[in-house]
Image (cartoon, rainbow, N blue to C red; front, side, top):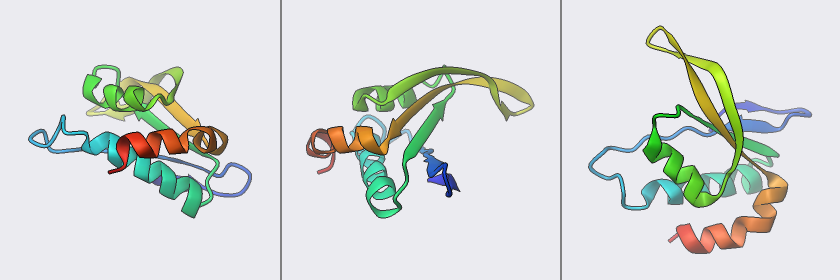
Length: 110
């Protein structure tokens, strides 16, 4: 969880990384779901966003498995190694979490 904004915004970003040897075991979806629970239920945030470079298909699979809302492409969103890269923005709000939390926790939080 980073770039936490309080006041009327009440939002933050989630970023994640996993060693390639551990990828594909369901750890990332579980970690994201538990992070959502913490951010909404303990931190009292209203909105969380995950921004993913389009070619990172493994990371996109994580948020798509979880059914996070695709908000479209943010062009030239982040400078990486001197190049401004587009990112696909995914988001979830506290209201969406309340509707889906039991489903997500039962499917992914072991």
